[in-house]
Length: 188
Length: 188
DNA sequence: CTTCGACATGTCAATACTGACATGTCGAGG
DNA sequence: CCTCGACATGTCAGTATTGACATGTCGAAG
Image (tube, rainbow over all chains, first blue to last red; front, side, top):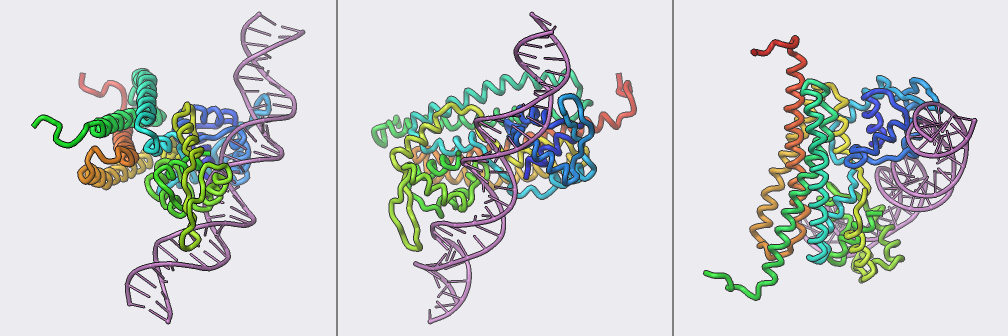
């Protein structure tokens, strides 16, 4: 039931509507950590309100309902964050592809790994300026978090790009080896 | 429907029973990429057999059914791997925790980040010797893949450990700043 | 020969999630 | 004043997933 905790975490930042929360999942949160659509978010908020973890603070225009975290909600969030992590839910289609690359012919694998490397490098180049901007416009003294998530994504992409490059090297080395006619062909 | 593709990928390595496949998910695959229990795997294999992607190759002792990939199955796996990745399913409780750390009090956050850093460092130290062993006992010439997944996990842990350390630094810097009485206290 | 742990496969109810469908409102720009 | 895009909330059927329950067998060690 991690969706619940994701919502608690978002509401810890301040009141928000189901619509606002849905938008939050469109960004890095949904890309790296946890996906959710509004069809799941709205019912969950109702259940959380029933459980006393959140409350409807006010209603706005277009039937907008603004939710706030209750003390119980904040306590539950803290408990979940500080709890023994153990083995949490993991489901990542992109990583799965990386694990299964081994099933491809070397030529296909090379194509795939090159695409991964290119994509990750491009993302790093897209994100770095954004992060640098953040660092310049608000000093170290302003909200220490929020940038953390961005930095996480950035480092993730860097790591994957490096991994893909390493894998390509390894693949190339192994293909070279295969292509060589026999042992003892290299200069002494 | 990534479970299906995970199963196809595992079967690309050779025939296996539902039991064998379940065991595969206990390792790195289940830890980093995709979780699945036997209760989901068995029904899925039946559906895949119906769809002609796999076939029961033989039955062994204890009712063991050995599945093999069909040509259709192999083609489907290749198609899925080489397809435009887009935005695949993402759900990772551990990463979610990292994103929500911002909701904690600085002191709690510090504790959490230290635990993350310690855990990742420990994992790196556990995995590195295993990888080195693999590299020594089978040269670059033997199966180029399989190690790729391990390397991915290793680099992942390294990246997260480094991120946690960076976050701790940033947190400490920001707390120092807060503790300082006012502007203009530093030496000119 | 017995026992026990690993092997091996399954069902079922409850819960989580997705995608399609449905509905209506506010505010800015033309 | 009209129109349209973003705001805003929801239901529902179908599918995926989990956790509890159920059942039985083979092989090795004692």
